[in-house]
Image 1: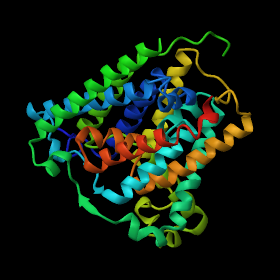
Image 2: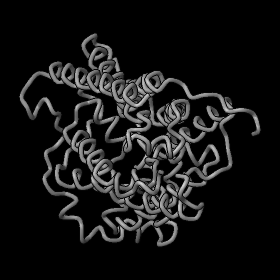
Image 3: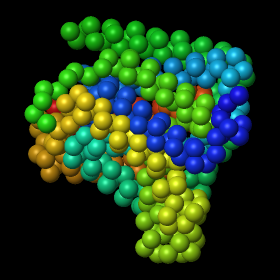
Image 4: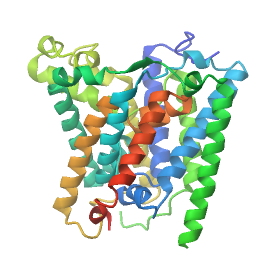
Length: 192
Length: 174
């Protein structure tokens, strides 16, 4: 039964070892897909390169379906996997700021590390900017704390909100992702 | 480094690979992938090194990232994971002849302008990821695959802002 850390099979030092291996594989596949290159990522916003959408949603689809079925088969207890808490307004605002920054930087936090590790100085600059951004946030935290902790909904899934079974949500998201892949193909053929 | 760079893997294949890694993280450690949390951890430790752990812990923004005091980054799961990301990214690029000492940018930008834009974009993402409680990895991917409401809110607003501002930022990527 898994998660291994939650069922007592893996201690804290084992988890740290796993962190290095998991990170290594994550970085490997990010670079394989071309996500260490800023102009490639920025192309998503101009529909000239749709790699970001393809990588992101095929990853999301794989993990979502995998977790759903492993739970069904009794291998993984999905209720023990960490579900981030929702704070609706600050997360919407954070997404807007983040999206603007992503467009300008052409890299996100994880991919900036891949870019920097493969020799790209712009990746290093994004890392520097991120660290500065976190520092700025920490310095003004007392003023923004009410906004930061506004509209807490708890650890809640889309399916809880709508009131349908989890499987129905998984099927809907899967259908949406597949439709997105079809549209992606149309856009690419339209350009070719 | 002068070896010809091999082409990238098909994005769908790379995506399935990342999805399996994320699934592995759920199974092994009961949590998803992350990146921005590691940055917060590094900043908190630097703050503790400068101000002393006792003073740093007075800040409600810093304290959650200092469970072990100054030396915490090496014990922080996300920091170790992100170190792995850098190693893995380098290994993949090295194997494919894609390691390049360069500054990637749109054709209209000078190197200095690009670095400034990259730093500015990073600054916005640093603040945004704090409000969102995660980034493309921890929030969009890891929470999104579990259908978290906040994660999908983040995905929607992130892409909305990117597409809304793209025409204004065209010069950066032309």
